[in-house]
Image (cartoon, rainbow, N blue to C red; front, side, top):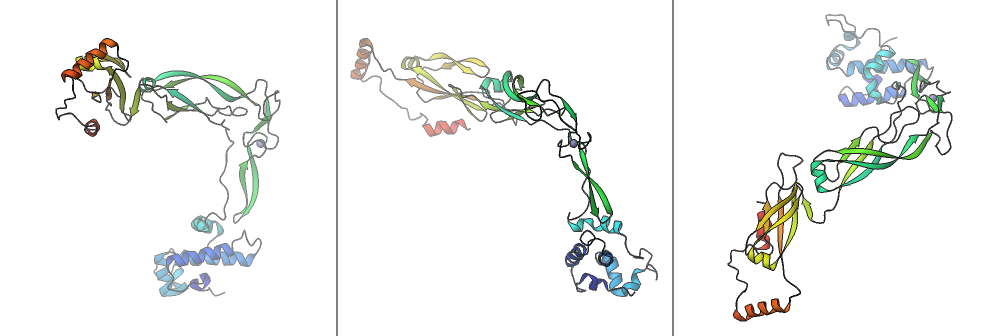
Length: 370
Ligand SMILES: [Zn+2]
């Protein structure tokens, strides 16, 4: 039998690009694949023929040799230094060399092991105040979780006899091949429920409250998730429990507002304190701090307490605390006070006297970011 021309086999022109050759081979390989043509010897021959053609035409050197000398150039003789094609490829070669071309249409499945079933994860939210987030803390919370019910027993899965896998026989180009899949009866665990106590589900699990103590590391922030391993739902029959995922929520602080690593708080002082000056104790995450308010302090002044904010998460820095001062205008004056202020007004004392050096609101805001 005379050998057919490789280009003819793949039904491409001599000027076909490598991509076109590859595509043409893929088409042939799928068309004549033994899986699609079981027992058809002619199809198998064509499948091998196409693989041989592709083996040559997809290799630059071999293709050049073939283009120049035809099949004569492919037989290893004539000073070409061996490596010729010889007596055709066998099926194993074809599959191992060009398997990727089939793009997963064919081929055996990967081996699967008995599954260690994991319980599902539980998610809870936990509220922390600023101090707890900065310094870390320990919290004990109650979670509702699925636990293996007392008295629940299991037995070996009758379908897979405990292996967790089922064998499936597939016809492939290698001939018959066994592949493994998870056992459908036990979902791969190898065990199924035997005795199920009242109230438990078909997997022997029952919902119960459990107290869990969670260590919150210093530097937690709103939205971060802590993973407490093994404190989620139990898995049925000897699997590993899932995890407890704790999402941190920031408790809204009545006095301190957070802005990145910086903290802000309002400080109200009386008219007299603003005029005469005073000392005030203010809360910070590190405890109370005494600050000085100068005599003649104007409402709207912002005091900056360096490094009294939060430690930065992504750098070594620490934010600042900004204290926004509000001068409280007296609202219910006594007769005496009223007389005093009226006298001031009549005398032309105590009038607003901006020097021109007062900072506008916008300048104050700008200063915060300097
Ligand atoms: Zn099974």
